[in-house]
Amino acid sequence: MANSSLTLSFLSSIFAAVAFFLSWSSAFSCNYVQFTTVQDSALSLGFGMWSHNWYAITKSLGGSVLFQACIGYGSIAIDSAMKSARVFSILALVLGGTFFFSNLISGCVTPNKRTNTRSEGVAYLLTCLFQGLSLLLLNSPTVCTNNQLITQLQSEVEAAKNVEIDFNETCAISTGARCCIAAIVFWFLAALTSCQATSAGRKEEEGEKNLRDPLIDGDIL
Image (cartoon, rainbow, N blue to C red; front, side):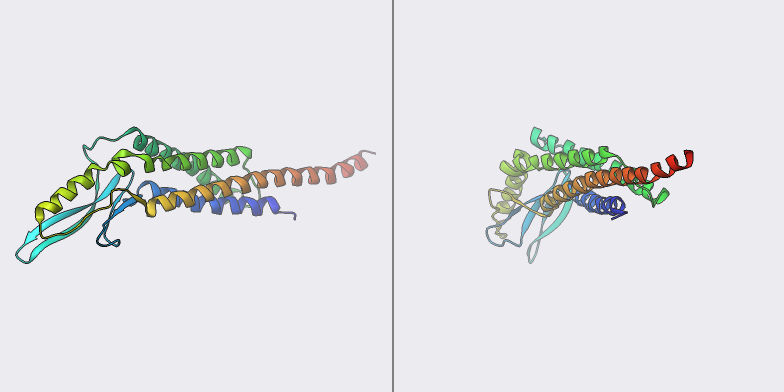
């Protein structure tokens, strides 16, 4: 196929676009992981890298009412696993986003010519690695294994007396973690198709050169 490099480059851009927005959703979601309640699995409390869900309990004459909001961690101590997850998620966004948007701009400037090199594929592969390392959040004591906010909310619920909510002790993956896993797959696909596009582009250039050389030699003779 004469334009296989352009087709593969286009596919690489599509994969990178999907991966970037999945990475963004994962990094800034309030529901990376969640704690469900024993009484009702539909009632859950989500935790992300930068913010988390929280319930406010308001007492009224008819009983107590729960309000849910997405708020930052504030002065809560952040452990090393959570800090690492934050760093890797930002690295994935910056590195992958830089190559994706540069590819997008170059595609608009020269739509019939591939201007990327093999470094793009390597960058997407590194981004895939960074994205995978952001899953370190699942090992964070602050979020998963020893969540003090769950303990605090549990004590507030017990103080309210007329509200029966008992959260599970372990977290489960939620929307943010699922987006992260999907982003890992799409970053890898972007890296693979980018490397294939580069190889196809070089073969096409060699083929065009071989077609031009005999014509040039004939003119000289």
